[in-house]
Image 1 (cartoon, rainbow, N blue to C red):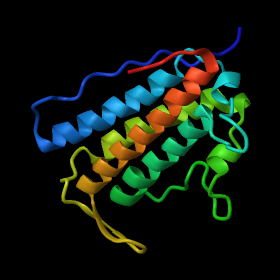
Image 2: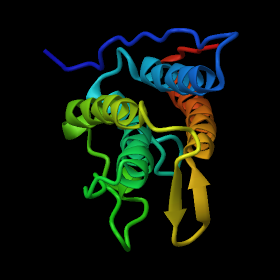
Image 3: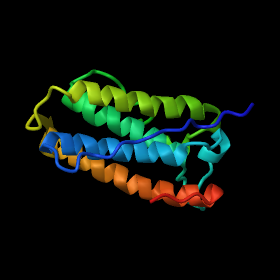
Image 4: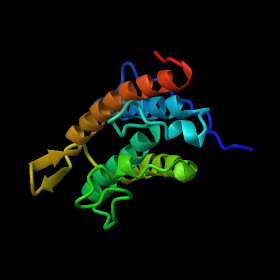
Amino acid sequence: MTWTAPAYSRTDEPFDGTERATLEGLLDWYRGGFLMRCAGLTAAQLGQRSVPPSNLSLLGLARHLADVERNYFRRRYAGQDIESLYYRPGRPDACFEEADPAHAERDLDRLVTEQQAARRVVTDLPLTTVYASPRYGDMSLRWAYAHLIAEYAGHCGHADLLRERIDGTTYR
């Protein structure tokens, strides 16, 4: 039997919540929205590239987002001494270039695992927690939430186009 990405659900963000609940809720809504766009596809379909010369695929996006979650929340704000999953110096597009459908199940599971870990490690940190970036200066956790919401929103748009091209499915 051919593996297919499992079904995912998402819950609506709070429409009248605190700042923290709103940021967490919106990010979780987009996290779930991305996973919904992958649901029901085979590994080969997840690895299907958009159009040449682009190396964009749903699988590549899942790998990229796993690294983003890990880098922002676990490495920067929680201070965990862990390596990136896919990014390597000199290969900034390895998430996309090396996306292999043979590892689609593992890679999608890694994204879900990183999302769960990200939620856990920042749950008790105030939004004013600062990561001192050597490149950009101080970055608050509040900013990181807003940045990841924008990151996921853009990639959900990419995922919409990829999914529609693969099997005609559209989302709202």
